Each structure stands twice: as C-alpha cells, then as structure tokens.
Image (tube, rainbow over the protein chains, first blue to last red):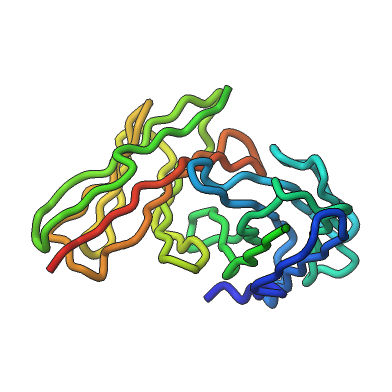
Length: 114
Length: 109
C-alpha cells in the first residue's frame, strides 16, 4: 500500500456544478498526478504537480484545474462539471522500488455527472 | 504520436494454460515500460519496469520481456487469482506516462 487516499470514493453530481476531488499521501513524495480512466481509452493524464504550488498540464486538462498548497494534498477541481467528465479518477505518486522508478496509484474516485 | 496498443482486449484461459499478453508501442523515446495489474474497483498495482530491449523481469507466474517495439507479459500455469486487467504503459519523457487500454484476463478453474 503506497499510502495514498482519495476522497470522496463515489460522487454523483449535476451538470454545471463545481466538484473537487482530494488526494492525500503520507509518503512525502514530490510528484503527484491526476488521471482519468474510461473504457477503451486507458488511463489519461489530466494534470501533475512537481512540488507545492508547482503544477503542469497533462494530455486531457481542458475543464480541470488543480492546486497543491501542501506536499501531502493534491486537489482536482472540475469548474463546471459536464457529462463527458463522468469517469473514474485516480491519483498517483511517483516513487522508487529498489532501483526502479514507477508510479503508485490510489483507490480511485468514481464520479457521475447527470 | 506516442501510442500504446495492447492485445488481445480479453483473454480467457483454463487454469494451468500458459499464454502471453502483448503491448506494442510507438514513442519518440523510451525512458521505461511499465506493467500494472488492476482488479475491479481498485487502482492499478505496480508489477514491473523494463528499461531496455532484451531486459526480462519475473515475479511468481509472470515474466515480462521487452524488445524495441513491444513487450510481452508471459503467464505460466495461471491460477484463478491471476484474473485481472493487465495494463501496459510507456514513459517517453519525465512525468509523461501513456497507457494502453488493457487486457482483461479471466482464468477458469
């Protein structure tokens, strides 16, 4: 277990409402990531952070913003949720296992936008 | 464009029936190729990282191999508990991971 929690685990919301998902890590890792997973598309990177207040866009960043005010917390905000943002969202942190670099994933948040 | 393709999409095996999953990729540069296992309703679980052609890694009944254009995940004498979706990802640059859509493996007792 990589010490990553996500909240909420499930959320149903309506089109046009703002939504914030939280990722919390206990590993003190510098790098954190947000992905979305959709059938047939695999995991796609939304945004990532390389330190407190340092973030950058990923492959599918439109409609999403992020913030990182503390090392342990990385927030993903949907400014005005749309049905196309219905998905499972995963947070990840980067780390090393022996001499191997990899990313470790949280349990996911299932978001449904009606 | 960086792309990762996994095949087959789904694979059904009898317990003990060995097989291989394929991950083919086209990337501008390869920092690493990753294999993950994902169980329903859970996050991906790290299995292996491969860095260069010819490299092999093993863990229990799983062995991952890498060539310049593809990777294979060999499953020897699988058991029902090996049933899961197996994900392949490549990292062409730092902080960029491109995932395939996965292979859903079912092992029948």
